[in-house]
Image (cartoon, rainbow, N blue to C red; front, side, top):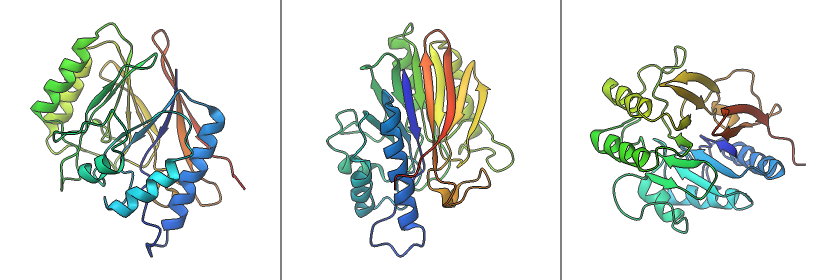
Amino acid sequence: MIIGHISDTHILAPASDHPAAQLRADCLRRCIADINRQQPDVVIFTGDTVQHGAPEEYAHLRELLAPLQAPLYLIPGNRDDNAALRSAFSDRPYLPEEGGFLHYVIDDHAIRLIAIDSTLPGERMGVFCPARQAWLEAALSDQPERPTMLFIHHPPFDIDDHYVGGYRRPEDASALAGVVSRHPQVKGLLCGHVHCVTERSWSGTVGCVMSSIAVDVRKDGGETEASGPLYLLHHVSGESGLLSRTRRAEHTR
């Protein structure tokens, strides 16, 4: 199974006077066009889809995502507003209509997909409270033999010196690692938030972080408008696990 992975687009409304508004829209547009050429089975979007959680930003985001041909699965980031995101994508049957968390499970593909909501209104850091722990434990216990990929906005591990202690409570990150360690069917955890590409061994599996598609906020270094945005392609199987590669979006004009 091939998974396209995008994150942290930080889309602004078309009428925004922010100097990067058009650049961010163009970055996402280029990635969508390139993803369509690669024909992944699904695309996962690990949050911070827009900048302020405003309805007009989500309306613009929908327009930019409309050409995408593969099934798209979103989770919120700390920049998102769950109610506004849910309203803007109300035609996506996988998004829960009720409840405080945008958790869900997708069983329609060769690899099982589990989305984890690590956000809390007004909180920039990650949260994985006891209610979320119980939900994930139950979801993983439901099909223990099925190869599974998890995706979440906040990585539950440190990344160099610019992302340290990314969860509001250290025990939250430890609890997430503990749940995953009990379920060897998990082939990987896909994350966003940190604006740089990182991959590492974590809790018996692989944690992979996607950078920001918006090149003006990337932290990898050396990125400019001319060099263009990038995204990740993940090849996942029950036998070989997770193999990831970075792909730079080609110019579309």
